[in-house]
View 1 (cartoon, rainbow, N blue to C red):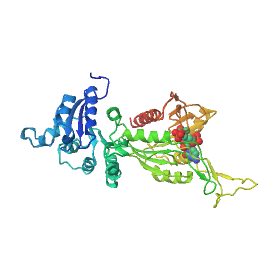
View 2 (view 1 turned 180 degrees about the horizontal axis):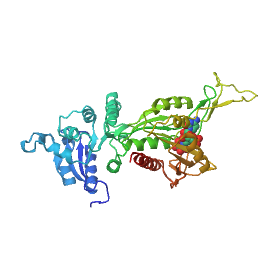
View 3 (view 1 turned 135 degrees about the vertical axis):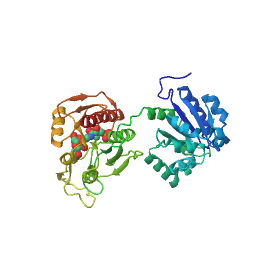
View 4 (view 1 turned 90 degrees about the vertical axis):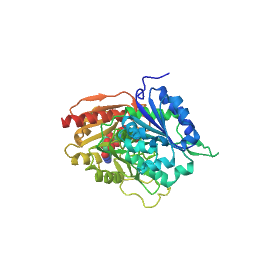
Length: 410
Ligand code: PMT
């Protein structure tokens, strides 16, 4: 039964299968792709054919299966190039350490890597690694994965769990449903930020009281990281200046980790000039202890008094230095007089618009996975948005930003 509503429907998908035990799971993936209406062309490496047969894929996809011997058929000599020209999407599952290394180096010594070289990233290429945990952690393999992401390949994280070797670890092929979902996302993603450089800030800052204590706030970084990831997925080159958070570095984003507001100020100002757009989602501490103690403060009957002094307002400084054409977006975390405070911040900080969140509302602001925001513009226009995931809020912010850039260039 074919599902017509999927972004895969009617699309030509090259399914690359490399030689690992997880190749058997690629059969299930092939079936799901076909069910969603994709025209599946399977390309198997020589090693993959030792694990599963081409007949399996031909039967499940009702489509052609290519193996290395097809490269040398005189009448099919340039078929791999025409396949690359027709593809809307390439998926390699499982992607072995060997295949990842070859793609990262631009090698093309078999049917699969030749097709991928000829695709030349004109369409999304989704790589789903699967291998032994030690192979996966091998620094050379990790370096190859890093390079692939930098180049623009979409590399999924393998799953953790029991491996064929009899022990557990990271390296399992993601479930076919997860690969299909990632493929559908890739086919629907916008690329309207291609060529733009984004600078995003996220997370809290920590202002030391003594070597073990600090003043900070509840920012988890989720809002800023969602923005960085959304901008990356829409084609921007993104630098994320992040305060201390528990989130992993988003792949394909340059991450600069800082602790204090002063470190954030320096990191941001050093990169601001070259940015086409700057979005400040970080919750920067407004004050810092004036004289942090060199040694840990001891318990005593007299509680210590911590004198505070103001931190530089980074956003105001960016507004002062804003160059023509640069877009500057701030956030306002408020609990009362919401619109008045937001309007004042737009003026004071020379912003193109501000994202106002009432952080006292459940499902909004700090730590949670959702946010409820109102976009406030310098001309007084406001656009309240419903409660959405932080990723969806990020997409909405980027939509308005793109509209602004287009308006200015027309
Ligand atoms: O990180 P999460 O847990 O996902 O939470 C998200 C969030 C609530 C932190 C985020 O949505 C948010 O509102 N971020 C801004 C928080 C904040 O510091 O708001 P503010 O109203 O105090 O500051 C206004 C703007 O000035 C902000 O863009 C802030 O980054 C900037 N600022 C503030 C002080 C300062 N010294 N320098 C600054 O640049």
